[in-house]
Length: 487
Image (cartoon, rainbow, N blue to C red; front, side, top):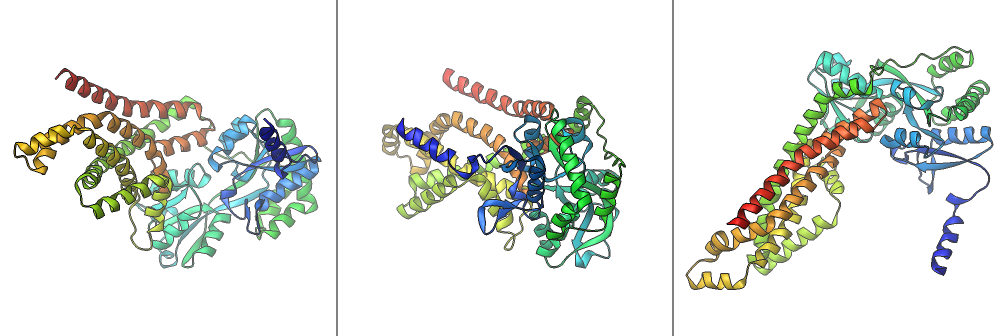
């Protein structure tokens, strides 16, 4: 008990729990990087960025102390609705879906959507209309994504969604995609980091950054709007954006409209649809994504079974050096996260071999689960009574014949149930491949949920599809087991 009390005292005395006055809890994602929010290179315990400074500005205006709450970017809307923080600030775009479900501040920065291409392609890829049949990268659930979906219908552009804003530009530089469409802030940073890329001057769209609050927190939102308008008039916002080299001629026009009492028009999105109408519209995309999930899972499981059998056989029958090497491989694969393995296969090996995203996902899942399958098969092989193997040798069976005709079939019966469990687990783990641009069922669902501002209906639809994929497999496995028991 004393240890627990001491730990509580230490935690409560830490800076994160220090109470210097009422707090303004603001949510953001430090993984978004500069100039939005990032860990300070000189002190990783604190964050820096223009949204950090805007949070400080708002806290001072409210007479509060700012406290940063780390939230994944795609979860910021849901966290705001739950009231996990007072305001979300992390380069959040103004959308109709957000306005309909959350308390949204006035825009504090206006941006343009820019098309980034390789310098060698600058003459032929000037607009989205020039990219028919080409792969164009972006972030999901953004204005840029909506523009690409529209361009897909009109021009045949192929949208490729990423989880971060760094890899779209590195993949463009090495030729995995043909262009990137993102807001000007990210586009300028992408070009600076990757020589050989250029931003086209044509503007594909215009959006703005806003703060998000819980839907019932309109009183605080109105006070924050007043602070932002005052900061626009007295130059404090301009000073922040100049420090981060983001100030341009678009901002004075935005600020003049806002401080002059002119309403900024709501973003035009097909978003006045009801949730069920949106569900009907997204259903074909979800079904296609479910098909990708099923295909990927079946192929990866087949690969895992073949490799797992080979590894298990080598560990049981192989010479000592082979057993040691295979054991090391199994332990390395099982001891490292699948997510890390996918990153290494797709991004880490890009300078050596550029694997297509689907192939990298297949190899990542297959190799990862092969390690687990091999342990199942090895245990099943060793569970067959030694007396049967001795009898087989007495009858003149070779080692291979004993494995194929006696030991293997019995081991398979023992391994069937855990194999089924592994396949269901692999089916769900396939959701991780979205980090390497494969749009499977969970990724498509997250885009759907972000665009309508709610996870309830998309989550139920996604769960129903996963159940529809996994339950038949479990039923078939049970039927096979019952048949064997009767035999």
